[in-house]
Length: 376
Image (cartoon, rainbow, N blue to C red; front, top):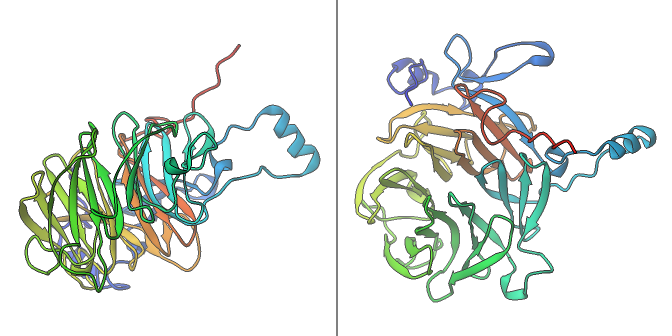
């Protein structure tokens, strides 16, 4: 994926624009392709070629569930609106074939919004699960290509594993391995799992690291990283994004992304603290797409920046705001990219997931399209 726009890293004008509103307010990147009821938010704005469209916001079950005809009639006659089971304190997001998984630390579950099937349910609190199979504080989540869900439970200091429908499969980890869990990332085949231990401001150097596990057995294969600011060292690491042949680690306290081989060998880093585009202030999570590009969410700037696999800035999307709205964020925390290239961003303050569609993908294309009910 190549973005030949004036907002790409290649054009010096982008860097001049970057000084506006800490260099990272996205008002210069968003435009209206149309006006009136068909208005679309497009990134970057005209006259540049559109790369992404804001597509929709999900706040609760009413945004995805199929409403039956009798329910529609009841709402019409009584004036009652649809009941929506929303998010209370969402943190991270993962997606599999139109099924959106959102960890909710307050509700102590993973909430599932299945757009394709038009339904909503929860994982980790079912009466079918024993106490040892339930979630307590789900933080980071990740899903493999089969739909197997891996959940980092910060309180239990465990990685909990469920199938796509929420049936408990297994768990691994424990207090002897983890100090302060923050995220989990699994590769597409479900073979390797990368877990980030954020440590803490006062914790010793043995934490602030990435632990690598066999995704099938839970065996701890190896670990890498220690507290510090040098190459390969971390200060409050946040998350791992898995690329084609690289790992991109959000090194939050050092305001950078560190790049490693799949074996944990340090390769390079990019980014630094600052006010220009391409800099970081409070990076939280990262994701990759099918082309290997890296998407980094920044809670302080209220946006996400897109880099190519070499760490060169392509563009950014979103703006920090005290008022909710499409593409507006106050406390963004999680980000992922699905099989079709759609981007999903969690905002804790506004309790929502914003979805952005790549311009090359049609509105009714991909997995995030509601299936038509079969006629009897």
